[in-house]
Length: 70
Image (cartoon, rainbow, N blue to C red; front, side):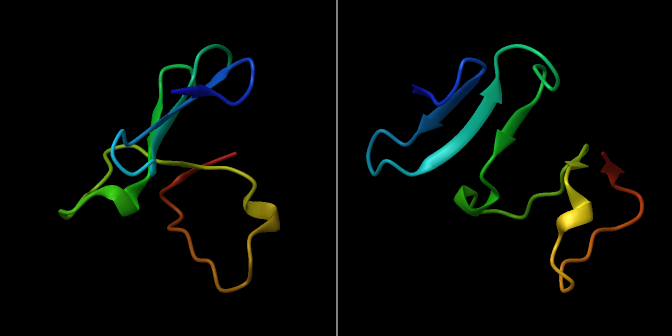
């Protein structure tokens, strides 16, 4: 584990060091755990998603309108 800021805790694989997930310890989104989806070896369908900073997304990036947006 590594506290990358006062409120964010990042956790890594103990074998290879890959970033696995991070979570906020306080403030907005403190009840979320963000998982690096590239680390999963099976199909995954998130029940809840949130996308932030979409006003600066690249033109090729597409997000469904049903996604929660900030």
